[in-house]
Image 1: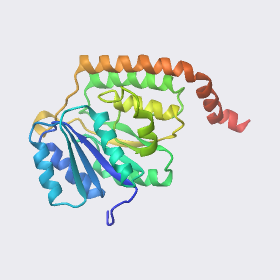
Image 2: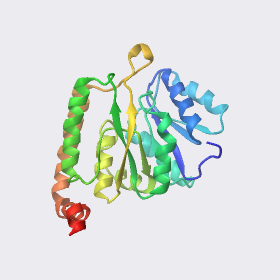
Image 3: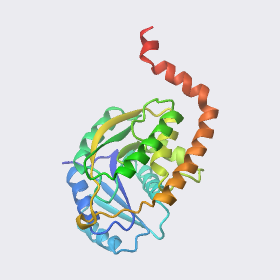
Image 4: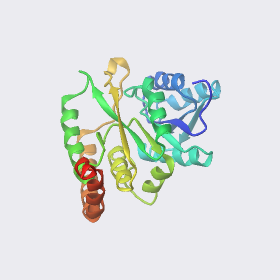
Length: 259
């Protein structure tokens, strides 16, 4: 991108990602300016390496949190600072190389055209995707569809997204959830409840093997229990919002629009 954006930035939360993070950041910078990285208490040496990259690149900023507090905390930290500097939207992407940097500009264009919407990546998986993860994803996505009455979230777990900062901060402040692995699905559902329209855009995703530099912090037991507790909270919230969601769903129905 020739000129830095004054409204949209790329925000990369990073926790012990290994050396792959440098390629991720370079690829993001090749497609957008500015790029911010929030180092979420990493102790693998990447904070220092990223700081060195930023020292030589005015389009890159690195912020370091003293301890690991979770992806949601890192995104919220960056979003609040971005809002203070006049930015209106952040594109969140992971630091591990799974998300497609080449899609950044296209997602930003969709956001600029529809600034009140959230632009959600709809993952296109290849053969590298673990089958067990895909099965679990279907369960979580099915619950998210139910919790929003199928209003528009194609995939609740894919973290490659553009958020309107004001709405993102509004749904996260004052809540204890949405801080770790529950961040991506819960924030999408709560933004939907808030009336933020979802624009779904296909995006390729790749699960890197260890020999390719892939690093995963996903724990099947811990994180699935976290998701289960999150969905219990969301189902309770859904029950209170059912009349509003049903009315919104009726207004969006093609049959209603045509009648």
